[in-house]
Structure formats: structure tokens, C-alpha cells
Length: 302
Image 1: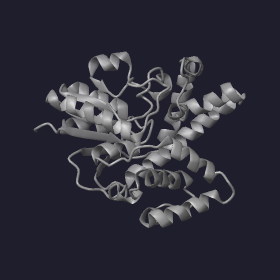
Image 2: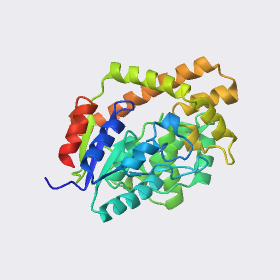
Image 3: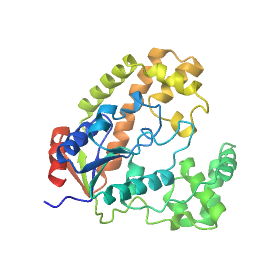
Image 4: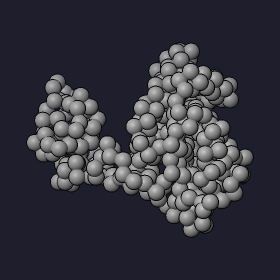
């Protein structure tokens, strides 16, 4: 079989994606892994992101791991640019790129080449302040309806974050937010062969709890303290990492550690379900029941 240029493995967190992809790439010999995950991109965020180990990276070439300082912001647009450069590099060596991760929007931005409008922080901050006032969210949605009725019809008035983002782009560029592509509801033909691991709630829930307990024993709390104390601290994006966010609440807001750990496990389980809901809508994904089957399916495409 002629090797594919790009293959993707998707699924919920703790479903075994990373192990399956690493095994298949190691066996293949001409595959390189691209981590489609905003948080593994940060240096120093090692334990709680399930980042590939030094041994893993000595065996298989990984991309988009440890490429940003924790004080830097990661956006979809920036990730898309970094990923495009990595894919060009892999193709230049004649190798196959294996995209692995559960960050659905980043994944779609890469495989479908979504046109991502730039960010305008000052305008966004002003809009967020307006949204926080009484009836502010409704007024902003009405403004969006007047400026870009197509976008307004697609965004619920209660989804303040999306309303603010759409208005931010319209006000800054004069271009309708709705003009940036067909949107995530469309699934065009893609040259990327996609494999997904089916969501097994009981197995994933157990894996999440066991994994987080192991991370705490490995020193995750000390890692978070070190990141907070480091020069520059943590960016808004980095602070939102599931698991890290809850431990930051323990350190900064005196949330009892037991409660913070329980909250982190619960938040990760909710994340897994959101990931499953996101990916299962994509008709282009070939679903397999577990990680060992995913490794075999990847091997057949490499």
C-alpha cells in the first residue's frame, strides 16, 4: 500500500489515542506524530497533559510539543499556522503525518483548512465588558443581528462568547463573521484518513480517575506551583487547561485539595463527553472499538 500523506486518530481524552498512535508510528518507521492539543504545546506543562516522554520522542518524531512558553497565548489561528509548517516539514522528508488529539476545533482547522479570522483583544475586552452589564448579552446579539444577520441566526443569544467573537470580527474588519467559510456544520471531502476510538464511558471514566491520581503522585501539584511562580506566569489559555485550572484554584483560592482533585476528575470526564459529541458528528471518521484496534487500523494506512 502506498503510504497516506496524512492520517488522523481522534477520540476522547484517556481513550488510548497516544499509545495507539505511538505504537503504529514506531512500527511503520516513516510516520511522524503531530499533537493536535493546545496544552502539550506548552513547555513545562508535562505531567497533566499526558505529554509524550523523552523516550517516546527519541523513538518517534513529534511535532507541536514544547513550542510555546506557558505565558504565551495559543489561538486556533496560531495553532493552524504552526501545524501547517510541521506538515510541510514532514512532507518534505517524504513521511506520513499522523495527527493525534482530542481538541476538535483545532483538528477541524487543520484538516479542513478553516479560514480563521484574526483576534482583536481590545475590541473583545470592550464587548465582554458590555456583555457583563444588565441585558448586555441581548443587546450585543441584537447588534450582531443588524450587522451580520446570518451569523446571528446561527448563534444562540445565550452563547455570549460566540456573540462577542462574531461582533469583534465584524467591528474590526468590516467583514461579516459569517463570510469566513461554510462553518463547522459542513464536512467536505478531505484527503486526511480519519480513525476514531468509540467512546466507552465506563472505561474512560475509570482511566481518567486512575490517570489523575497517578499524576498527583508524580508531582503535578508541584508542577503547577512552579508554573505559577515562573517568570511570566501562565497565560489565559494555559490557565484554562483542565486539571491545571482546578489545582490553581487550590493554590490561589484555598480550595481544599481533595475538592480540587475531585473537580479536576469531574471536569475531565465532562471534557471527554464533549469531545465524543464533537467527533461523532463527523461522517468522515471510521470508528473502531478500542486503542489496540485503532493501532491496527493506523498501521494499515501507514
